[in-house]
Structure formats: structure tokens, C-alpha cells
Length: 222
Image 1 (cartoon, rainbow, N blue to C red):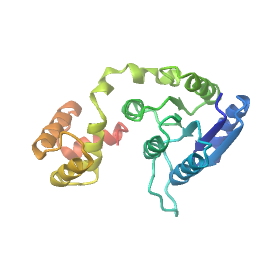
Image 2 (cartoon, rainbow, N blue to C red):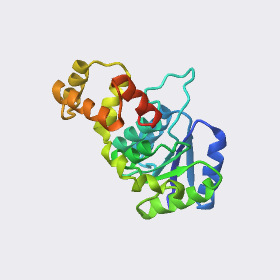
Image 3 (tube, rainbow, N blue to C red):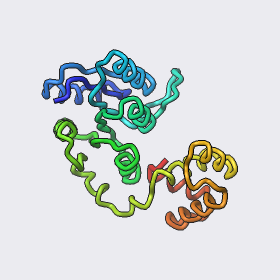
Image 4 (spheres, helix red, strand yellow):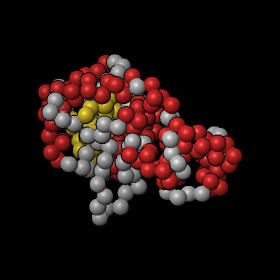
């Protein structure tokens, strides 16, 4: 079983269920972080000390407050942690149940489990931790299994999400083209980006780009 686990969640109440589960599994060391930047710093320090975390249990939503952070969501935290510690196991523990968002977590960030917060959270979290340790597949809350089986979600990939995110921020096509080229994201020409946006409009039955962004937000894609 895992011996060193980090819990990233900004609500103390949610920590209690996770801690109870980890204690029942005899996990020797449990640390906490209420901010994404704080969690990443703990991961970096643990690596530097030669005692890396083996498992990260993270929420997706972190409420903004007076403290300024570079990382502001579970997705951003997971991506950063994976760069620092590629072998770490990651379980998302969240109330989020949007199919597209969950599917992308598995496909793009390669998380090891997803547990929906709710009445059976302790049982489901325990099961997810055990499965992650054994590296078993389809490690997800039973009521969300349809997410992995829903073929429509497979048509939306990480490129689409990045593109819609930039559109939601009001970034022009010229600037999106420049950013994609800088980051090595392909296709990255203005014409190919326009074609991709049109494809997304058709897929989501959006009347225009503003409507596309609104639909994506409703579905939890961005």
C-alpha cells in the first residue's frame, strides 16, 4: 500500500473522509494542501528530500481568495505535478460530474482514478486507492462509468479544449496561432484553426463562437 500521500482540497470537511480512508489502509504519512501552489511546492520538496509522494488525491475546484496563486484548478495542479513526478498516482475527488471534463482527465492527464463526492465517498475512495495501487484500469465511481463508455466524449480532445479556452478569454485567432506555434501545438495555422472552430460549431450546434464557448462552459469543458 502507499506510504506517503498528499491531499489537495480547500475544504477541511472533505479531508476528513479521505483521512479516515487512508488511516484504515494504514498509510504512514498524510500531508495536506489548501492551495494548488502549496501542493506543488510540497511535491517538489518531497522530491528534493528523496522521499517523493506516491499518491495525490486532489479536488478540481479551488476557491479564489486573498492569496495569489499561479495554479488555480485541479487540472493545472495535476499537470504540474505529473511534470515533477511522472510516476505519482493521481485520484481526483470531486463533485464534478460533467462527462467531457472527466474523460479529458483520463485521456489528457492520465489520472489513475476518479471518485465522485457523495454518500458512498469513503467506500468508493477506498476502492479507488486500492485499484490505483494495483494499477487496475477503469478506476472510477460506479455511477460515472458511463463517462468512459460514452463515445461522444471521445470526439473532444485536448486540442479542442485548449482552443475553446483561448476563445473564452477573447484571444484573437492571430494570437492563438502565435501561442500554438510557440508551444508546438499542431495544427497551428490561422486557416486550420478557423476550420477547427467551424468543426466544433457544427459538432455542438453552435450559432457562433460566443455560443460555442457558452455551450462548452455548460458542459464543463472549460
